Image (cartoon, rainbow, N blue to C red; front, side, top):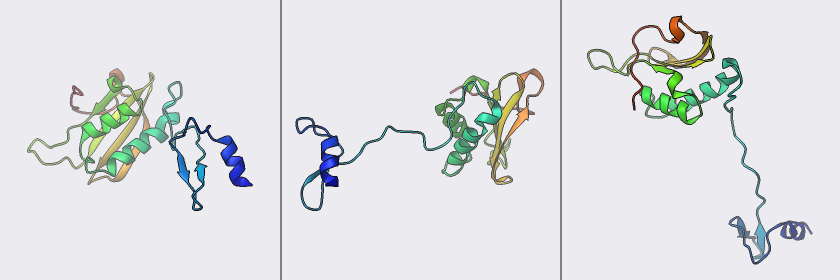
Length: 151
């Protein structure tokens, strides 16, 4: 009886669904389809920095789990893909002045007029660290020299 109910809900025979399959008995069945929903945090464009920290932290963790963990560009590109404003970002250098990998890499997104989402990763950090911090002078989020985001 259950198979009849599912078959009645599926597409007509003239319009097969890409999710159609065959049951163990050889009878066609239709797999239920659902509207895709995000599996994790999402950007809250009109929210606060704290509202967006879960997404910022999730993106940071995703990049950290890859072989690109030491690339500032990888974090900036992933944050941009998640919907954060590239023009509001800063990132520190990937390498030291003598060409060694940086012990710590920092990146940020300025949020509104007073807050920043800040991430720090690297061998000296251990696991990724993310936080909401107050903006510095002139709307900056990171202290010291940062690299141009010009790609």
